[in-house]
Image (cartoon, rainbow, N blue to C red; front, side):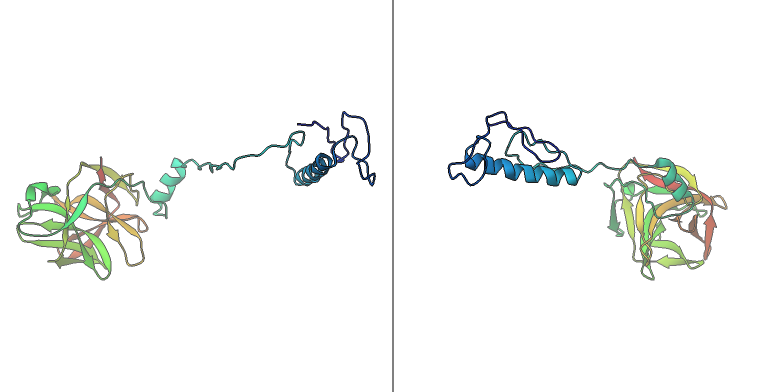
Length: 239
């Protein structure tokens, strides 16, 4: 490897005696013509790199193997996310899957369903979901009656075609004003694509499950033929 010093101006100051090429047509500064030509090429590349603001060490000529550059990830701004959740914005909580929605059957193992408590009539209520006007909505299910109830458009709607949530490990986490904690159970989406989450509250002494709609900042529950909003509620979260 022949060393040569290359200045910013691109002039060469080799450490060998100046001489001419065999053809005598131009100076090669004592280098064989092929090597001198390569030095000139590297000098041009160096000038281009310097103009572009990139430093290149032109004192050696090497062959490099392409490498993959990893793009740094932007840290999650938890405070910004909290503020976004509070006003029902676009940011969605982190997800954890493992639970499943199963089409209702009277033969389903009710011990595997997620109970939310007992209704005013003493019947058990479990977590479900059902479709209504292109929205997949969280539902309160009465297994003993084989029906589910959803809230939509200010009213309660009974459904005979629905799904029930089958177990993973769940907790109910207190929240409110459109906030949804991480790993909340996703029940469905509106026709406009907004995610809806499973929420719970107590109304007239009875537990009610419904949809947490962050853009509205509330939990909606179906009760006595009506859709009732709650600012404070619990969210079903997978552990």
